[in-house]
Each structure stands twice: as structure tokens, then as C-alpha cells.
Length: 133
Image (spheres, rainbow, N blue to C red):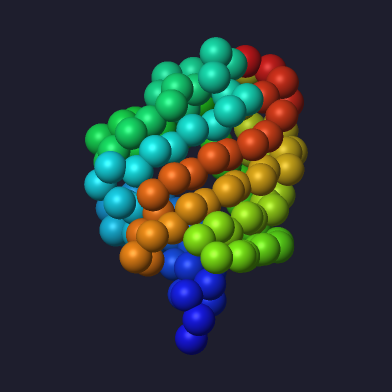
């Protein structure tokens, strides 16, 4: 198996863990000093979801921020594009904003950088205005 194929497998397993709500398993695929950021969420998304993260403790806060802000009803990765240390994933996700009850349906783009089969950098891209925060 090529290194690129191994990286895709890591990201697939990470998403499976996320789908189960198993943050500890997600973190098992993430380097303890990884960076994690949603470029368009900064200043728009509540809590740690809207802030750059470094390391496991802040990444846990990122997931807590998402969980506090939205009820996820669908999270469907539908395409993975991999080259060298990068895996780019296109995802349809939808749910309801807890504060307003407003439904949302958004295209996410996740850009993962891996080293030694661990995520060292994550960039999430989506339309921050779609949630109505």
C-alpha cells in the first residue's frame, strides 16, 4: 500500500470515529501538536469551533463547540482526493442550529496534512453565513 493510500485509510477511519461520536478515537489519528482551523469560521462560529486550535485539548474544545451549536443530522463524505501528504475531502453535512432551530445544509471541504500516518494539520472550509449565527 502506498503512503498516499495509507493517508486515505487514516482519514476514512477518522471519519468513521467521528460518525460514532468517538472523539478519543478521532484523536488517536491526530498528532498531539496538530493545528486545526476553520478559516471562515473565525469570528463567526461560537466557542472553540470558531478559533484556531493547537493540540488535543483545544481540538476537543472544537468538537464541543460544534456539538453545543448544532445538531448534526447528516455528515456524508462523498469524494477524497489524495496526493503525497494531503487528503482533500468533500462532504455534505446538514443539521439544525440549536439556538435558532434553523436547518442548514452545507458543503464542507476538509484539507488534511499527514505525517507518519497522523494528522498534523487540518483546514476546514465552509460557508460560515449558512448557519445564521
